[in-house]
Image (tube, rainbow, N blue to C red; front, side, top):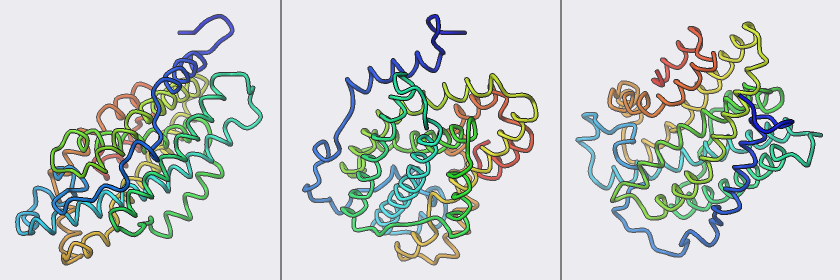
Length: 298
C-alpha cells in the first residue's frame, strides 16, 4: 500500500492528522474550569477501574475510602503519564532529528510534542487541584527508562508510545462516560482522548513503516523490547502508597489488587485492540506474549 507518488503512507497519515489537529485541539488552561470546587463524593476513576473494585476489601471500604482511593489512583496514573510523556517527547525528538522539515511527518511529530507538553501540565494541575502529591515509578524503573529514552529507536520507541497511550485511552473513555466521576477528570480525559487518538494513529503508521523493512531477528528483538517497556509501564501505573492514603492496610490491599480477577479482565479487554495490532505486525512473539500475560494484557 502506498500514498501519492513520492509520498509514504506515513506522510499521508501525518498530513491528515495535521489537518485534524488544526480543526480540533484544546487548550486545557481555558477548557478546564480550574476554579470550580470539587464535590466531596466525586470519584477520580470510574470505580470499575479501581485496582480493588470487585474484591472483598472493596466491599468492606467506606464510600469515603473508595473516593479517596480512586482519586489517588487516577493521580498516580496521571503522574506515570507525565513521566512517560517526558520520555516520549525525547524519543520523538531524537527520531525526527535532522529530518526534512517540509514533511508532514516532521511537522506532526512536533505537533505531538506540543500536545504532550500541554497534557503534562494539565495532569500536574489536576493532581494539584485534587490535593494529591506526585507519584513516581520505583527508582530502578526510573533509571532503566533512561536507557529507553537514550537508545530507544524505530518500532520499539513507537511501540512503547502506543502501549502507554492505548492503556490510558480505555480508562479515560470510561471515566468520560461515568456519572459520579469528577468533572475535572472527565474534562481532562476528554481532552486527552481526542488528542491522543491522533498520536496513536501516528505511532501505528510509524510502526507499520518500520517493521516493513525489518527482518525476522529484528522483529523478534523489537517485540521483546516493546513487551518489556509495557511491563514497566503497567506495573508503574498505580503506586502502592495509594492504599495507605485511603486508610487501608497496604500489604492486604496489595495482595487483593494483585489477585483481583475483575481488574485483570478489564486490562485484557482494554488491551485487546493493541494486542491484535502488534500481532498483525509480527510483534507478538511467544516471549513477548509471556510478558503481556504477566501484566494481564493477554
